Picture 1 (cartoon, rainbow, N blue to C red):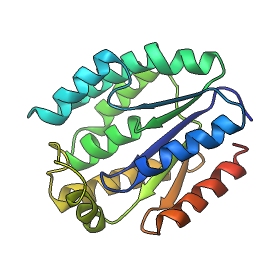
Picture 2 (picture 1 turned 180 degrees about the horizontal axis):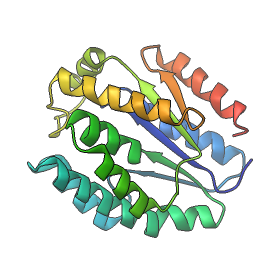
Picture 3 (picture 1 turned 90 degrees about the vertical axis):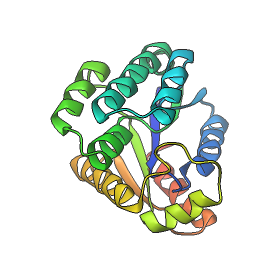
Length: 204
């Protein structure tokens, strides 16, 4: 298996991606890799503090984007890049595609500004593979309602999430090798089988 792999899980809230992250991490661990499971925003003490602000405090879209990329900068320098440099596999719940989907698509923020921030903060680093859990916004809303107390984004209406999905679709079309769409409407066992097939095809 390739050393230093970087896998990300993407999708709207309620798509079910978090359910499968641990199983993927365990699959890679059994193959002999060191595994780092992390999330965004978050992954470091500073980034987790910024996460609380982003999810809990009202703010405009530019402030959101700046805080998310500040958290990402710390996450990359403290966790992701060192792990990849020593040959570990990083499995991350959300990364920059979420920013383009939520702030760019959902909030309608300037994609050119997001692209500039992406370049400054990541300096060319992108995941090796992104699993996009695609689910209709109406179904995701039903799943979220039975889950937990909603954060600021989870309280957004269905039209917001339709725009987020379209934001993900644009990112997937722009990078079809990295992105793999997972049909998250299927039962969990079938979703797991889709993921296993993708990973096997990538030698993971």
